[in-house]
Length: 157
Ligand SMILES: Cc1cc2nc3c(=O)[nH]c(=O)nc-3n(C[C@H](O)[C@H](O)[C@H](O)COP(=O)(O)O)c2cc1C
Image (cartoon, rainbow, N blue to C red):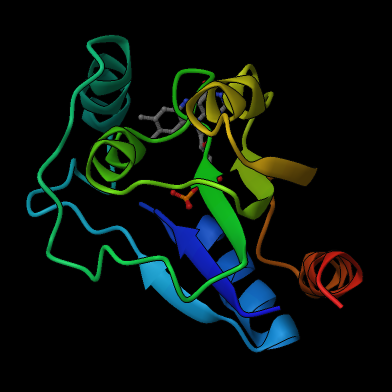
């Protein structure tokens, strides 16, 4: 099945997993990049990012190909922000119709995954969610790369 990996990452953890998934299944990759992102370091990033989630903000994204018709299988990856997915996905789901796809979800977090997958599932009705996988920090270790690659392959043969 032709696969796409969509991800957002502020600090590189989700990026690490997303690139491993793409490598495992030979998928195309789409990074959601806000035109103006929150700071990568410092306490303010929690205030700014958390408030974006709570206020359901839709940060403007750098342009990307919105046509997903070529793909049967999509992996969505996110860091957990305020117990949910990163707000770039609000913008993405407003712009792009995702229907009739097989979908796998992955996330990474520091404390707990919260309701991240539930919020994704709510936005992804009309698709088949085949599996979910979560990673607790530290994320960027070889063991996690192997784990996420094996998972990705098992789902998309
Ligand atoms: C704005 C913001 C909110 C966060 N909220 C949570 C949270 O609710 N629960 C949690 O376990 N980790 C939370 N984290 C930590 C990130 O989920 C974690 O550091 C993740 O690995 C970052 O992924 P990234 O490197 O792809 O950006 C938050 C981080 C940021 C920047």
